[in-house]
Image (tube, rainbow, N blue to C red):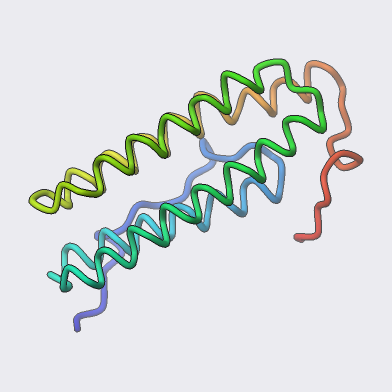
Length: 146
């Protein structure tokens, strides 16, 4: 099996950051899973391996969404319900898209596109809400990461 080159992966960048360490960390793990799937597809891995990674990606998304939603509830984020609905929609779309075994590259593009648009467009609104309301999020979040 060949080692992936940096050109084969999506790179974390500042635009994805919310400034909330735990959420940013979880986003980095999510991006790493997207990259794992991308590399496996490009290497021509067997369907069983690809399905395993898709399952991991799906389960991690569920975990992360619950984590993020719990944080939003703790800070009384006013767009919580709308944000939660967007999470639900992604899980539904992912559940449908994962069954199209003819075009895994399309699935990669879908998940990465959703990740970038949601992280930059929606998750950064949480940071703005905290800043606009002068909320010290540390008291609402169990931040154990460096």
